[in-house]
Length: 312
Image 1 (cartoon, rainbow, N blue to C red):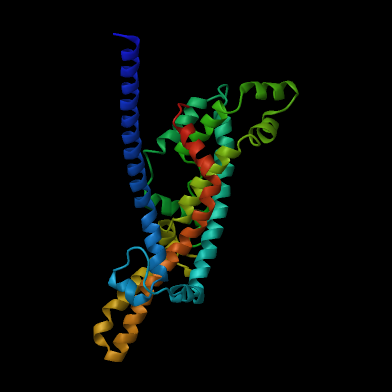
Image 2: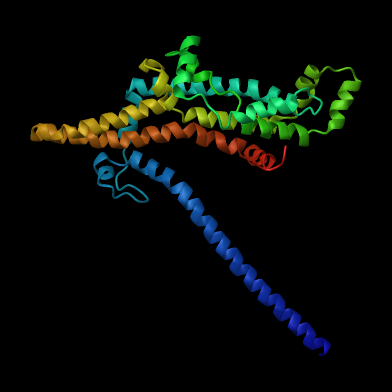
């Protein structure tokens, strides 16, 4: 084979591989675009329904944009005092419980990251067992009742403060992301373990603190079952439980339409349709804080996922 023939063959191979790469990249982009659309469209649908007229939304013919835009649903939300009380309660519970989780998780993970900690394996297994064994709802209710926190705001703040998976992720961060030489230098300078944690480990742990805060905040923000079990005072209900009540009321109202006059039916039907769009407006308002918060902690979230993939 001549040199020119060899070069021609190599050029064809490069062209063939290049076309395959282009096809491969196109398929990947199409799949990612489809997955992205699948994730974004539900929230977009919630948004357009909340701005649509009640009658148009009730027909279920909305796909990309409403024919008529109205803020009637949001006006009803702003006029409903109980919704804003639930919103304020949710913010309080989320902030307080997130701080509570961080206070328990970060120091515990730092202590377990020390290989010379006495009983380190036993303590780790103690947390590990809680992933599979639980006392159940009745013992938990009896415990909370004996503590006197039933039907109080403390029941939404004090709960599972340390999760085993979060503990392992945080412990792994302390073990892999902060060089051991930094700790040794602090010990040589006469720093105690507590001073080392406050002045060295904690300032260098912004990423994992942000990840744990995001986990705790998202879990608390969307929680409603705990309030459903333990809170009978509606002034202490979080927003998610208030939304559940609105959904039930909407179904109840729709059952009474057949027993009314034509004028009452028309008015009741409009109110039922308005409640339908109001439900989506509340959903969007409830999700808005997390949607605003997530872009600021996304890089920390990705880093936390990568940390969790390592062995602790």
